[in-house]
Image (tube, rainbow, N blue to C red; front, side, top):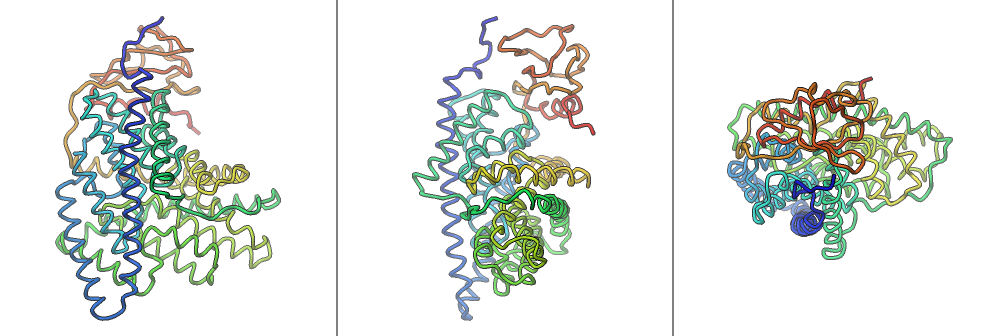
Length: 512
């Protein structure tokens, strides 16, 4: 059957729009990353100014920044926090962000938070900025709702690629975290956008990957028992971090002071901490690099771990425009350093395997917190560039995944999205515009070998197309679905979330 009923399958459209979204979303995200680098340099100068006049100026800057952030959050409510749950909600049709205010608020608010030193990252905001710019592009060229969501996904992938200089991680992020399923069209457009964004970061702005250390020695198989132990320990830290993020939000909400003063309190706390323990401030990538090249005393590293853990939860709980992606990696890296120092003191491993332990623990904690193992492995591989470490990273990720599943902690972005849903939409409400939800029938799922008429789709949802073995079929009630089938369901923007929830059990394959 040779037909093309939907324009969103047009390969020329995918290539051109992917290139343009990659240039726009990636360009703005890279600019945001460049600005944050300047803000970090300014922060170091501010906190080195030890005179009374310098302290007064720093306090005034913190108060003014807090007031600006509050006003930005009122102007663009969906710009607060990480931005990843907002993008997920946008794709699911739960709410719709006002793209331009969100992008502006994210850039300005994130810059001010970085200047004062809140322990937040730029990756989540870069993802939302990329998604927002893609939405602006989609509206400008008048794409339909289905294409718009595809482009938003590509913009989000470009944002992550720009933030980490990791294009493959951008693609996998869109698959494992945003959509949690895939299609050839989505991979094509996200890969194109991610590559363009990485090109802009590397060749236009001359930016390098976030972490610059490399693996000099491959970890021998005789030390792989440490990977199991480190993966399990780091997973527990990751689970505690997920709980800490929620507690941080609750703490901030329960502060017995008005909202404006709560934000001022958060920013002034950063100023206070910066004068006693400046290594706790900011995203923290420089801390890992410094500790990797100049290991400190174990007591200081433990203090740094506890301080960054608590201050990240405290900073994120305020709702400031900042994410937790980079802080997660930093906390994991510190756990790896501590574990290495411990087994080194027992004579169980040589000193030159420190970098190995850092990247292994980064992979493990990201898997435990985000529950996206392939993304975690590829992201760390792209950052250190050593494919020989693949087996160890896979083992660490696998151990962390099953430990966190055993502890029954939900992925952090799923938790944050659910809390936003319970709170209610803060942007434009979703509409009843038509859209197409695409997914693949997993082998071994309950949807496999099921007749179409027995699925029981929600109201306003109609299965309109099945692609099997390169052929397109018009669905009929008695037709039986097979593993690997690509299915397209016509629904509305408003009903996408309901549809996805109704299919959750059918699509699940990890029933153990």
